[in-house]
Image 1: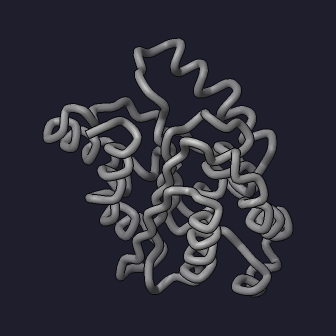
Image 2: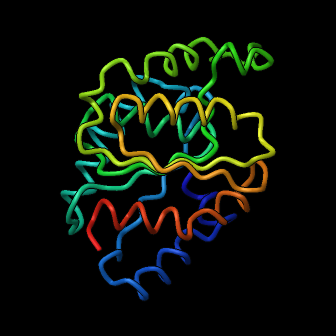
Length: 199
């Protein structure tokens, strides 16, 4: 949801100020928009392969880059980022997963009418099955205390820590919206970037 991150949260403005204050965190932002958000972002194998197998290599070949990218996404976008990172380990150095739709039957049965609900619950259940896929990957997660996704995000963070993944989890006093996600970038996103790229 790159355009909405930029337009509704001013991501590029945030990154510009951050880069001025901390030159080691200066970066390029690749802002992607989905064609069919529900289908692409619900742990779609084709989307994950396209992102890590074609788009990221093309960007790295076309523009000067250094180090592994930090991916970020909100809601279904968080699922898409984690899925892509697990499909091609080593593609990302870090992930900011905000209010991820990491559905489980235990917490999200009310979402069972969503057309990709089963694909999401399978992905969430299997997300920690192969710990070696997380090698070198740093993760930060944020979720609002007023969200339905809070319990499934907390549970996934705990499971990830249980297999040895470095995870920072932040629960902020807000809901499922771009203001809430934007308000977590400082210091969570800045801290994640520093963990991936150095101080």
